[in-house]
Image (cartoon, rainbow, N blue to C red):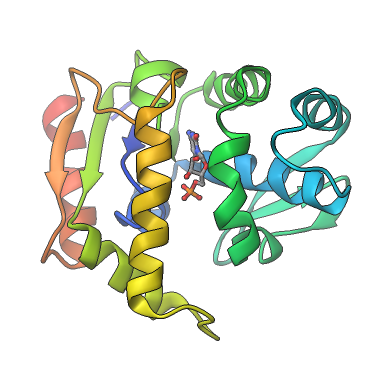
Length: 220
Ligand code: C5P
């Protein structure tokens, strides 16, 4: 098989990042988690004491910051201006603010350009919300992963080390983020016309990975 690109989109907690990481490992491809880039910008602006609605300042800060993604032992490592923020960008504070930051047109332009650059040489598994529709419209394989909101919340809940929310609260937070991501004007969360829908409710991670690999075999 020649190198090709895989676009994996879907709502929060659909299992995109775990599946993308394992698929990339099996194919010898590089995994790019685009959500981490929006999270990194959000982390930086909160560090600077800014709020997402201070658009002008947020955009200025994002233009000045340096985001670096490197493959790590447990997935992708994220650095902001040289500092490892891999774990810090998964906090509740970031979860609550990231979708608002991701609505800012200039932030999306900035990050989409970086994402296109990363995928230029192919051999990339990229996950996000607008990869099949906007970032890599020519990706050879496009999958839209979803699952029931409850199951997505349960999956995320089981990953939390010290949960500060109940499962019901987490489910509500996920539903609110999905709503914001699907209803925004620019590049909303959407299934590309040529993406294959994979509902992972009740599927194991192994089954999801095999299903994506099977699609790769049939499409490329
Ligand atoms: O994938 P993850 O849940 O880490 O993404 C965090 C947030 O980043 C999403 O809820 C969405 O608001 C934003 N995002 C986006 N476009 C992408 C990836 C993530 O708007 N391609």
